[in-house]
Figure (cartoon, helix red, strand yellow):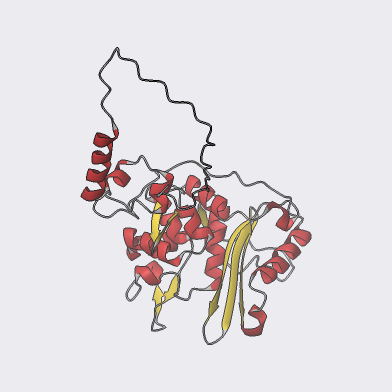
Length: 313
């Protein structure tokens, strides 16, 4: 979600296109289908510094690099963090809950805190000397699009809108996680070993369902996609041209970049075919052609078969 947020903040839309190795996908598909290659392409387009600055603004405070060294993102310590590995570096679970809380709050970040209240000896609440720090981390339209991308099935929580993303990691032990939110609450669930057998979703549901029952949260609808941003194709272009057989060109065959991707041989063949396909009109004549002789033989039978080898039909 963070890399996608960076792209959206930079002007891309949820329908922008990105290369996932040998397949082209939209930004929305890259997130929903856990397309690591496309997310790496996206991160490489904007750079690790930009993605990590977005992450820190949304609530991610630290990240461990490939050697296990903890990097302080708030201090701008991005050493050893490669754009292609941003989805694999360990991060604090509580921070991920904070990131999704920012998305649920329409892009407004609120400082993570663990103390709900401080009471005096008589049980009265001591007034805080300062309020929690808040600031706008991402545009409201960006948060809206991220909610839409991660929107869960409407019947999965009794017709209650929620959004989230989960995944499994199979290393020395199996790890599963699921991070998601309803408009009022964000929860990050992480399970390891045998507890991860059913994935992170059941654990997440256990917490979120308990909170809904205890707090009495009413069901609220999420607003849907914003429609903002451009349907960029920078992530799949190569020197201004694109694979004519790729997913984008199949969906947009009339795009100039797709036409420009034709090889000279293909273009010449197409032109030659057009030139030779027109037959000259016959010269007018007043002579009548003889009528064919009558015949009693039956015409030869012809058979036709459905062609299944397009484009050779």
